[in-house]
Length: 538
Image (cartoon, rainbow, N blue to C red):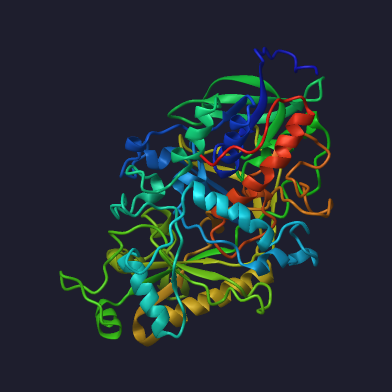
């Protein structure tokens, strides 16, 4: 290959180069290293120890260092930006996907998932991840007060509710409610506690603050991965660059970054599959804020607390503990199926985007909003995950990274464009109506959805921007997660998931990564890498 004029390279060599250290990256890195391959993991974010996860929202705290918030045209994406990726900043809710999701057809009118994958086929891989993390089966004794109130409201409205399975060690959990910004008590079972230490123990090298920019071919049929070294405090700055040659590349930078890297690489790699950067899904996500009437909660639900209040529960707890899955019914029409989770969302964008009734309709600012904020302790947030239409599409990539960096940390403007279709809007309207039916019954609460006026729609679970499938016209990857037309490049993050899942996707992304590993090992062996498959779980 020929390097661009003026660039100087000290190129390193490895067998497998993994981009990203979240579920898709950490799991593949562990198995390949345990099988004997030389593995390097490049992670664009910092590497924090447990005692560095601060309980603070100030700029420069762990809260702003480990998140990536990218605002696009009609869609905003919130994801992890640190070693451990999404596993460090997620709420650890780990449900399996309902069977009907694998049969979804969406806007293309035919099955989106590969024929080889359905719920039964994925169950053994779910089992492995649940064992490795591990995932706990919660009961009513371990849910939070807010979760219990949501369950009581569901029951009173004639709906069911269930404790959510979670990767949380309840014996270590202090209910501090800071789990979203990393867990300093190691109660949340992030990848920092299992797969990543297992990968390191088997020789894998993990390099934080290394942001991959593009991939090129080498003359021996491998790939050269180019990266910038990111400044520790100001992510707009770089401290150099470099390149690593690898026989296998595993892309797991997240659904908001993986397609951008591939798009930027097209000039050197050759034409990308049509589906790279298309069919993006926000997992059909939407949030409603219910402001609980304390007197009604006491009278209708028979609850009270030692201080005389009935709820005011947001200051203690953890992420989603209780969900209503009544609408996860495969007999319902597509786009009418969704789950509802009780959720604590920390101050910040939640307080900005929460709406109140205004003289001309709902608004996210004004005197009524001030009163809403005064009553923040009585909020109960509900989180909808529904079936959207894969209507997101990425535009031209920015010069570096996945976004134009606006601030030192956390905030950027990205190339994603999202216009919700009538199908998606109808699903949101149906879920909004059910939230109101449950929470406003007999005046228990006042409910309004978060505004889309400020940053458009929003998602904490971006999916499908480089998806698996059987049809080359609508999927970038085959059912083994290999990029079509580019043998030796695999994608194992949320971008490989074909569509919205109606539940939290972390367990499914992890299970798909586990499932992809044997195929990646076979491809590596065909390229001369001495690697085997079959290591025990970390």
